[in-house]
Length: 392
Image (cartoon, rainbow, N blue to C red):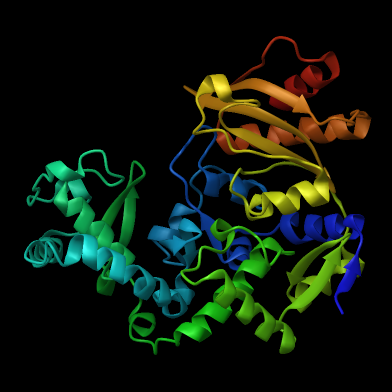
């Protein structure tokens, strides 16, 4: 029988699970992956995920761990992500999953170009895709996701299949190198787990990342190259082994790791107000967020401006065990521009909440490295005063 939880129990558990503070290495280890998104209005998604959990975090603090310490590396997980280097052997299943598609599209039809690209990388690397001398233009690829340059598409195919990796980034762009020159030798040569072992590990990792996860969460949440029936079969197997625990929250079935549920008795709401990333693990399953928090969230960056309800890059705002507000803002030329702030329906900010907002604004301004704050007209006085006080 599933464990029965109230929504209040679930919210308290998730507040502690997601937003307890720790150092950068500990947070990355706990999450297992952080989705990398190139949009950069107030730091990129991975920066926003980390600032919500790491005290005094600032934009790009992750780069030393990635490109000097090799604690994390760029890989495919839930879309492009930063993942733990120690997990390289278990993640090679993604190379297998992606190989057939890239083989048919790029590697097979352009097999003569592949050794040319690899040879240039071996001799001259690390390189961005535009630094290669070999740059055939494929007219039929114009307008495609990776563009019309053959070398860039070959590099992406080799990246997805594990032959090349991201050595570093230059202005956000991948600087590629051979995997053998970046991945530690013991991991590169480690025994590769079976697909079933890797799949079980990835499913447990998703539960660790999200905390409470619905078996019917959308494909994007899982990002696994298996059918839903196979995923659910593995979940049942993990439940039967006691490695996942069913939990029903007021009519909706979730699963969680046993160690996550063991923290329920000690879990406490956070007194911090937290600005949450759009692609934060906490927000991955938006139907679950709507069920638990009465908070409907749509990421509107790809909508035409006239069709947006809330704004371009809107961040949810978490306080105690609730989602209490949302806002749209941008950093430009050192100025943090707040365009819209919305308190959620039914939220009346009291003194404690406004003080928490002031502290959150102060932390976020430091995280951004912003010099000034610009507020919109039409804000209520108490909220505007909290923003101004936090930005001093």
